[in-house]
Amino acid sequence: MKKFWLNIIVIFSIAIASSACSRKTEIVKPQKLQSKSPKYLIKKLNANEQDFEYLFAKFTARTNINSKKFNFKGSIRIKSDSIIWLSFTKLGGVELVRIVLTQDSIKFINKWDKEYYTGKLSDLKDFGGINVEFKVLEDMLTGKPFDFDPEGKYKSSNDYYFYLLSSKAKSKVRKATQIMGEDSLLTFEMQDKKYDKAISKVPEDQLILKNYYLFPESFLLAKQSVSLIAQQQAIDIAYDNYEIIDDFYPFAFNQIIRIASKDKSSRLDIKYTSIKLNEQLEFPFKISKKYVPYKKE
Image 1 (cartoon, rainbow, N blue to C red):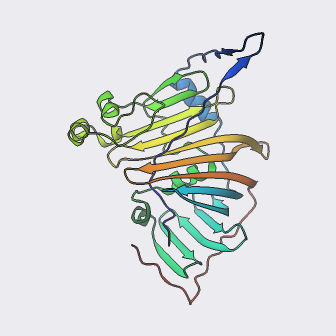
Image 2 (tube, one colour):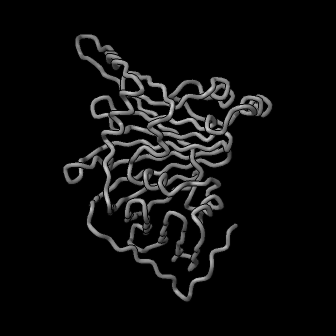
Image 3 (spheres, rainbow, N blue to C red):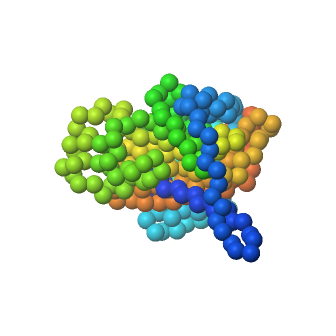
């Protein structure tokens, strides 16, 4: 079975140009956004965060994992802070994989290879190489700022298109990992000695770089990324086409996830087609007697 949980590092770039037409075409540079304090941006970000009890969603997706492409459909069922249920199907409607996650467990059935797996949530590390908490997974799936600590230390900046909240990190750490400014990528093309020296005396919590990009008018998430320096991993998710569900919940119907690590890269394009909130859900899961235990590679 192909691994479906991956390490996290991401790329997202947005280029916007405006042009004004006269007898001679010229590029019109937009006006830079007015600066806002970290406290102000955190307040705005928190104000947009709404809670739900149940969420049901359908989507179509395209993946590109190490240059291998695959299209599929899927559905998500969530009971907040309790259970996440995922189903992935071929475009023809044949279910391939069903996954159920709780606060401390994971189980799945792979109908294609007639395999099943049951274990601890921490076993995700064996599939993707990284420990992921249930809350982080739920926030990722529902477009909330993941791994965001409102009481954490952040600095704010802005350009012509977005406000940015970024976690504070020592400049030598950013330099060693070739993160040149807030908007660039973790490339992992560092010299080992320089890298080891940079992180040797840095507390672990400072080896996690977090960036939250906000649209200037709504202060909704435009993109968020978390880079795990020591593990040389990161995730970046971009959001677009927001709609307000049931008059209270902002949800981005288009999402792009770019993933990479030292030896992996992937991209997932998701388009949600249906969202329903707070309708009680069931989370069916049954292992056929014909299935065999999944063996980790």
